[in-house]
Amino acid sequence: MKPLLGLAVFGALWELAPRLGVVPAQWAPPLSRVVRTLLAEAREPRFWSAVGDTLVTWALGLGIAVAAGIVVGVVIGAVPVLRTATASTIEFLRPIPSVALIPLAVVLYGVTMTSTLVLVVYASFWQVLIQVLHGVADVDPVARDTASVYRLPKIRYLYWPTALPYVATGVRLAASVALILAVTGELVIGSPGLGQQIAVAQSSGAVSLMYALVLVTGLIGVGANILARFAERRALAWHPSVRREVPA
Amino acid sequence: MRRHLAALALLTLLAAGSACSSSSPNTPAPAPGQPEKVTVGVIPILDVAPIYLGKQKGFFSKRSIELELTLASGGAAIVPAVVSGQYQFGFSNVISLLLATSNGLPLKVVCNGNNSTGVDGSDFAALMVKADSPIKTPADLAGKTVAANTLKNIVDTSVRASVRKAGGDPKAVKFVELPFPQQPAALQAGQVDAVFVVEPFQQAVLAQGGRKIASSYVDTAPNLTVALYFASQQLIASKPDLVKRFTEAMKESLAYADGHPDEARAIIGTYTQIAPDVIAKMTLPKWPAEIDRKSVQTLADLALSDGLLTKTADINTLLP
Image (tube, rainbow over all chains, first blue to last red; front, side, top):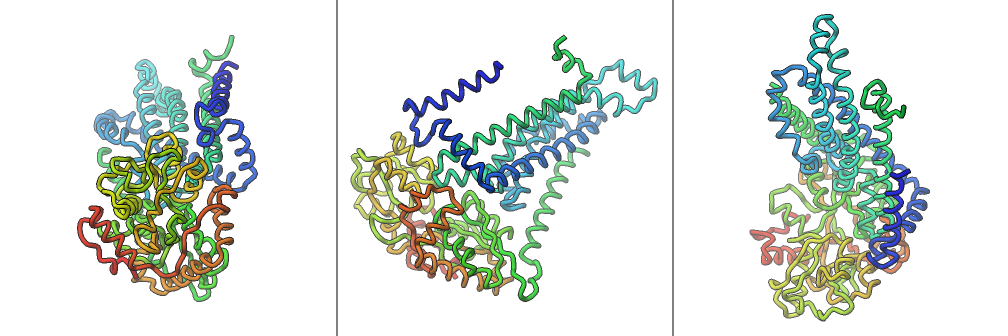
């Protein structure tokens, strides 16, 4: 229960700081008031449709990024020539912040979910790709020779099992990045979702509601991480890194 | 080879985007009697209450317009979306539109948006200071810092007009960019000496004891036109009938909202999250159906003398 202790301390600080006047309560309301606003907002259909929009943008963007990252990663990683040829291009494109592409996305797709989706896919694709590339490069030479001798299909028996733990890490990293970009896109571009609701609350001076919505994005992030970890353990039940975590 | 793939992907993206953007304004006109779908980009502020009210009252549907209002975070996102045809119409302030047209963007105004109340001391926007501030008039702002939501736009232009009117030196005022929602707290904390806020943040500053020292929109011009509804020149050329119907519906909406402030207040509660007690207290803008051309000319002149525009803007190319 130690992880919850940290959360409890954070919650207590949030509650006390405005109450003790450390920060102005008008602009940073205490946690209890934010939670009450959240409970009231949760009765509104617009809240749930915003949550739904954000989740759809997140899941769709993550799905596209993971699928593309795995396919591109395995193909590039398995062919040494491709790997050498693309290394510099990847290193050039990868650090470009997704948000820098907002003007391009808006001109192409307007203030729509597609614009936000472009950002989400762009940001999370690299997380997966880099992990897959490292995973494929990590193939054990003995396993490689064995697979050659027995003429086993290389992707199924060699690259995939080796890369899988890396893929799992990539997916978990991408899941958080995708959520960050989904909310950022909605907030800055104004496509439907929680980010847009945060922007509306902000421009209406509804401070408590704004924090309530921010809290929800945090909760979704925690949920996404738990889900990704659960999937990781299921997929890698055989892997030493996961097996070791099981108490003897 | 893969080196070119990314470039190829980007090209496909651009092609797909431009194909879809160029196709949307040219979609075939719907069959007679079928309502035409129209998307308008607006901002979640009280200025756009008439279009929401007009939609509710059926002013658009009775002219065969199926109105879809899309909230954008600011005018900066609306202008490109209108130019590329994602939106048929958009809402933006006068200076932003003057700047956009001076940069060669093919925009044209179709209808008035909103105006200042014209009443000094009782407008929907105000230049405000802290309760205990030594600043009494805009002339005292020399060497002081004023928060503006966007630099080189309608706010600093108007504030400079107030300073000039009070006999101060407009060049001596320093502006810092700060979004409206953060201005009341920044003023209270002493990070800035004065703020220029619109409703509902005027009420927030008043609630913390702040004082109005000027109604800058009123100081700029009597009945200043603050914002306008606009379309791309392409849409105006290709669908003159739609533009005419939209303009008629918009004028009816403006006149209705201006005559029924209580209904305007009620509709503001539906698309914003402003607290009901604040909505009841807010000063609403004026919503005349016609553009105050003289005030637009004043803004264009001020934008030129303040250096926002590099050459004289012909307001007749922007206005209908």
